Length: 100
Image (cartoon, rainbow, N blue to C red):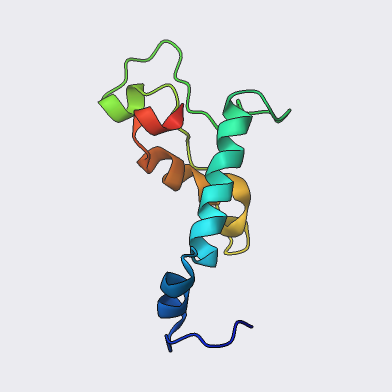
């Protein structure tokens, strides 16, 4: 614990120390790892994550994006916490310039 903090809430203490919340740090680490996977730095089979429609004409600009990731189905609550499921929506929300 750090003594002498003026803030009473978690957010106030983080702001005073100039830190990110645990949730923000996890998201940043997840996105960084996924960028490494898509660029081939990590040896992980990325083909099962990327939405590639060979021979089909995409209906929207979002579907035409080659870096777009298809979110795997998760029927159970426990499966929705898996890395491949939780990262897809956050990755697709990024703009193209930030995925470099």
